[in-house]
Length: 282
Image (cartoon, rainbow, N blue to C red; front, side, top):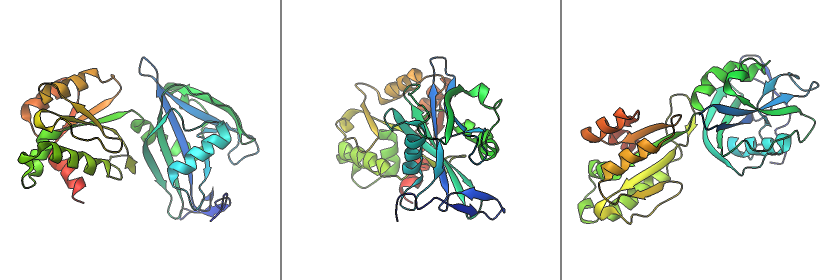
C-alpha cells in the first residue's frame, strides 16, 4: 500500500484497456448560478495523454488505500490545483465495466472556484454551462455516462418530519421522552452510510430534521441539520420547502396526509416514514 500504487493499465471484462490498477475516479464539481444554470468544471486532456484533446473530469487512478472521494479530491488537487474547500460531496456514480470501475464523485461547489492546470495532464480547465458540454469533443468514458450523470447533479434535500417518524417507529416509551427519541432518530440517520438513489451508487443529500414541542432541544449529529419549530412543525416544514431554490429537489419524509398535500403543492416530493425506517433497520 503506497502512493501511486494504482498507476498502471488494467483490462476490464469488456476487453477494454483502462488506466488504474485499482480502478479510477474523477471529480464532478458543479455550481448553480443565480438563474439555476449548472456549471461543471471540465478538463481538456493534454494531447499526449490517453484520449488526448478530449474533455472530461479531473481524475485518474485510485490508489489501493483510497476510497473514491479521497482519490477524486487528490486528483483534482494534482491536476486542477483545486482544494476541497467550498465543495460538498453529494453522491457517487458508478460505471462498472466488470473487473474495473470508474467512480464519478459529484460535489456541489459554493462558487465557481479557481482552477488552473497544475500539471502536464491538463491542457485547459473551464467551468462550462451544462448546455455547452455535449457540444465538446468528450472523453469516450465520460460521454458514455454523461446522459445519466447529468440527471443527478442537482442538489437534493431530505426533510424529516421527526414527530411523525418517531411515532411511526413506535419504540417503547418514546412518548415519555420525546426529546430523547428525536435525538436517537437523528443520530441513527447521521450514522447511515448513504441513501438509496435511482442513479447513484451512493447518495449524500442535505438532511434537515424538524422538531417541535417537547422534542425541541434534540441534539444534532453528524451532518444532519436540526431546526426547532417555534410553532407547528408542519408549518416549519412547509416554509423550508417554500424557501428551497427552484433547482433543488426536496423530499419530505412524513405520513401526514395534510402535510403531504401542502408540500406537494409547492413542488416537493414525499415518502412515508417506512422508507426511512427500512434503511435504519437494515
